[in-house]
Every structure is written in structure tokens, then in C-alpha cells.
Length: 81
Image 1 (cartoon, rainbow, N blue to C red):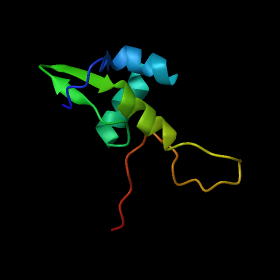
Image 2 (cartoon, rainbow, N blue to C red):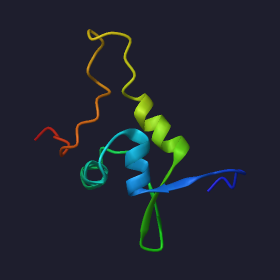
Image 3 (cartoon, rainbow, N blue to C red):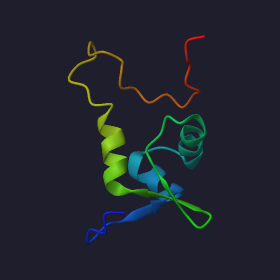
Image 4 (tube, helix red, strand yellow):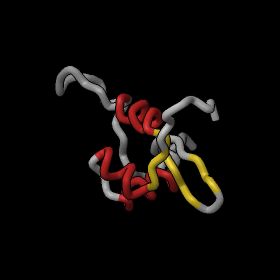
């Protein structure tokens, strides 16, 4: 951890609320490896606010014709055979 002052961690329900997603959606993202990075503190999953913003920013678009490369589907990643 960087140890910066004011660093704030959110549990899954609060992180979901911050992003406008359900806790279940974040859990699916964790399972599939498609979500924001998280930390395990003891048995608890926590998210840093900066990491949530970084992940959400991958979905930034200027128009509907922008490439679809940064979407956030909560589904397993498909790898070439």
C-alpha cells in the first residue's frame, strides 16, 4: 500500500453503490477477473476509491461510435483456443 493520507477503502456494497452497480455484479467481476482491482484484508474484500475510478474510466466514451474495447461485461473472459 502506498500509505497516502486520506486513503479510503470501501467494502463491496459501498463500492457497488459508488459505481451504481449491485454487490452481486462486483462479485461476478471478481470471479471473472474483469472488475476493479481489490484487496483482501483478513477475509474482507475492499476497494480503494482511486482503483474504482481507474476501472470506471476504462469505459469513457465521447460518442456511441467509439470502439467497444473498454466495456465492462460481467462475464468470463474468452481466450483464443
